[in-house]
Length: 319
Image (cartoon, rainbow, N blue to C red; front, side, top):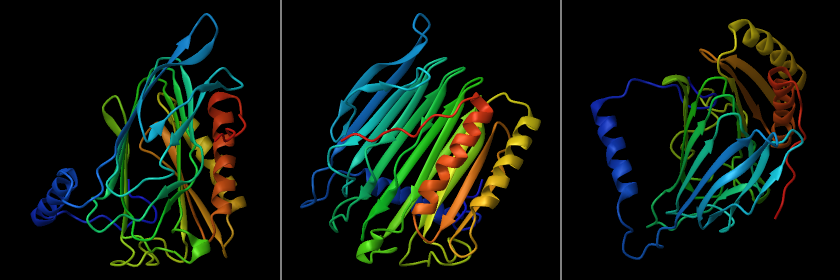
């Protein structure tokens, strides 16, 4: 699936494949002399459903700074809400962060951030920052990932890899909002490059494969093949495996109506598309961030009501 706002994919040549391999190898090499020591943070969380209480609990918690979770809070329907902290205040050049999330059968987990994710300017000798997510949602379980905006500072080099696997009747709400930079400081598209990779599978079959990369200095983000006249972009994946196709057709039509209501030709546009099976994707482009941060929850609430029969309030922030 081609990401809205990313460059159309072309056939990869052997030379390009080799170049990509070389880049990955450079990223995994030891720190260069004089560079900031690599920060290798990791976070492993497991969620389990307790039949006796009808509630989800955080069962496994292993962490290494700068990633940290303090505790899980109970949601209105007995799920577990977790705030993921980054003790560095953001992602620094050379950082390597890994998050492994396991949502057990029947459990309901909600993840959010404590604020915007800031991608700081690295030193010239630092490797690109890398963050990897490995996520598994068990049978009858639900995971909702509702973070704040991703803000790449001037000079940032960042790669994010997300791999999500869904079992039978597993549900997923996963959103992302990307800013052009610190707009209030005049830093729009001043970062070096930003790469967001996401794959969602069910029973080993891909539901979505997204490859999003922007290199503002080499290829203008304002090209119609990328973001066009817009500066902010957002996506929301809505999945629940095993539902009939007609259910998805009905939800697509309903969310498309909401997209039309929220779109404004001079500032914000929304669109909805169906995945090959078991889900939808919502896309948004805007001149400013507010229409996206306000619009995504509307799509989330509507889809959640239709798929799970209940809306929930957005998670409160903690510091």
